[in-house]
Image 1 (tube, rainbow, N blue to C red):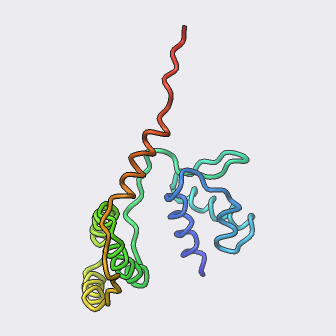
Image 2: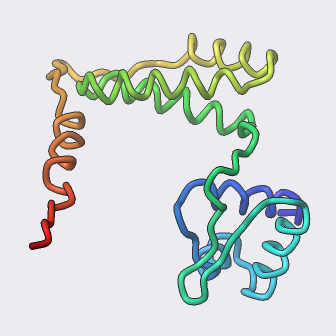
Length: 157
């Protein structure tokens, strides 16, 4: 992987989490910590507001928005294949959420990529179970998480 591709991928990784440790970056790209520090410095020098906290990791400063990501043809193809699996697993909320996400992702594609995605989508074979049991289990789990992880109200006397 060339340096420019790696630095771009590091930027995307920083967008994907609240905080990313240098060790995570080094392991993902099979580079030294010193190279991670150089790459982060390059991003900072190019105007990306990356903060850091010793012992915690790197983060993109709140309020900074990056332009939409661009996908490779292979990544877009992976999403098409995944779409067929999602549609047949039975969870309506997961299917609806993926569809919404996929529409947003397709909006970032170039026209020739959109054509290729549609062609692959029309040619993708659908492995389907005999019976699909519809549910909303993912949505139910997500909503229950809100209940279990509410911050307690602490009143001072």
